[in-house]
Length: 108
Image (tube, rainbow, N blue to C red; front, side, top):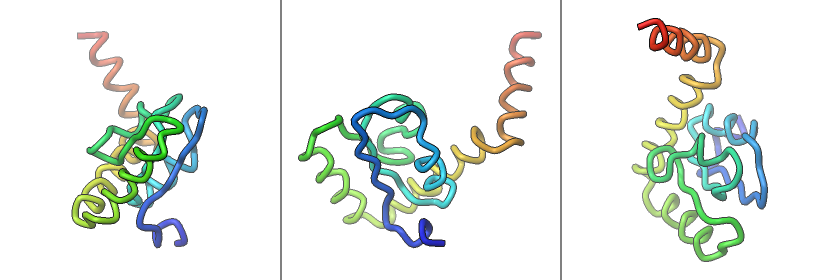
């Protein structure tokens, strides 16, 4: 409930794998603002389901936060898109469907 009350989720990591906190925020429809390091750009597609900035770029971080806060409609759309990424790639059913698609492609 606390995560769902957030306007945005901020992940200003210098290094990162695939953050479970990031995935959890996306599951809760919260648009992320995250540094483009490690596995984060594989999860967050800039402008679609969140915003990315270069690590240690304070101006980029500030601009991304401002962009989310200044456009609540776009923020809501990114939150919904993030939720779909969670459903498609980070739930049991979503992962099983991904494996099925791989097998279908390989067997075709």
